[in-house]
Structures are given as structure tokens and as C-alpha cells.
Length: 183
Image 1 (cartoon, helix red, strand yellow):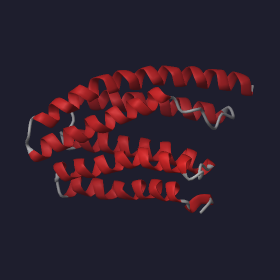
Image 2: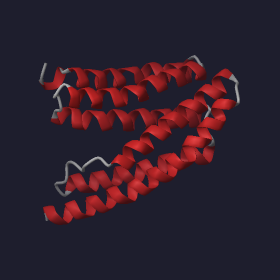
Image 3: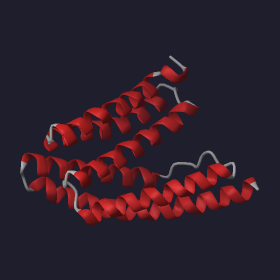
Image 4: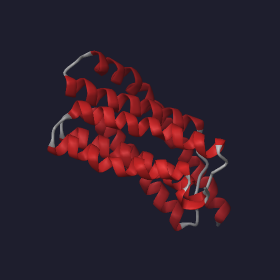
């Protein structure tokens, strides 16, 4: 199957479709533990769609856009909902939101100057994985009222956040070079 509705893109669409269910679990049902489990599924399928795209030779331009959009939307929604529900530490949530705002402004600037795509960096994927694990663990720890996931959340969250900021600096440098090349 090729085009928009191939296997990897369908998985990305499903990831996006699960986000409202996640929000319902957090904001309506206040079932933070199961919301964390669902976020873990959303995060795990991030790896699966990319793997299948390469393995099945179904890499598409839509998939290259859809995958990072699904990541960003899932992370932003999980962070904002976690902040509202008091699941995430305030400093952690604010640091993640601030980074996303800066990257969003950079992306808008790049788009305005004709830059529509930057290459994904391994460090960005590693940071996203660490943050998925961390945010998921915060939800599970708070929701199921157990301490060990909170330790995992910090164990992955602090280095994940450091990597996230480091790769943001790298992406902004890539963006600057791409804007200069497009001018």
C-alpha cells in the first residue's frame, strides 16, 4: 500500500486519534494511571511507524511530516494536561512548554523564509523517547499512587530535558543555515 494510507501513516493517524481519549482520561475521568498507560502506547508506536516505513519501503513525504507532528501534539497535550491536572512538576512542564514555544517560533520563521523541512537528528529522537518515558512514568506514578515510576520519571526526564534543549540549539542552527541557503 502506498500513498497517504499506507501502514506507517495509518499508525501515525491512530496515534493522533488516541490523543482525545488520553485527554478524556486526564481531564474528565481523572484516571491518570491509565492515561499514562495510553501515553506509553502512543509513545511506543512512534518507533513502530518509523521502523515499518523503512522496513516496508513506505517512507512518504506525508509520513515525514505526520510522525513529528504526532510526537509534538502528543507531548504538548500530555504536558499541558499534566500541568492542569498537577501530574507533572511545575518546573518540568514549564521547561518543556518553553522549549516547544521557541521551536514553534523558529519553525514559523523558517516556513516564512521557505524552509519547510529540517533533517531529524538522532539526539532529537533520543530526547523524545526519554521524555515519553518520563511523562508516562509521572502519570502512572501519580495515577496508581506508587513511587517507583516517579523515580523513573526523574531518571529519564532530567537527561531527556537536557537533550531536548541541546537538540533545540542544533535545530535552530540548522534552521539558520537553511534560511541563509534559501535566501
